[in-house]
Length: 101
Image 1 (tube, rainbow, N blue to C red):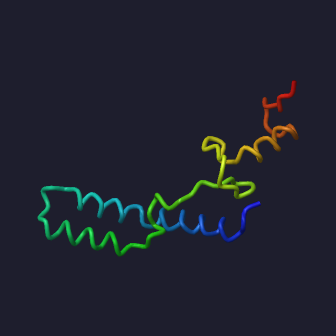
Image 2 (image 1 turned 30 degrees about the vertical axis):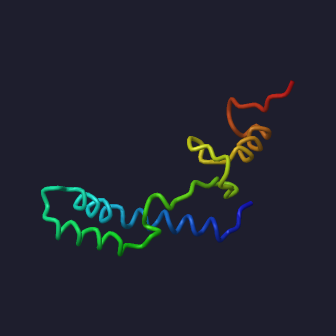
């Protein structure tokens, strides 16, 4: 089980990303648009840098929803391999059985 603080930090980042997504996309589009004068593009870049760091999408780290584990994470299932194997062993995932030979 991961630390509660790490899990909560990631949840906070996800909320901030959702909150600032539209504003961040608008400012990014302004900075790359060549038709806009250089001064306005520079001001847009400054406003973009004033936004919270944790509102950037690249700061989000995928974590298992059951255990909070950050490594060996399956995106499709949104859980780690250990949690997946545990659920499969208990028979809680339809059609999946733990292999043994």
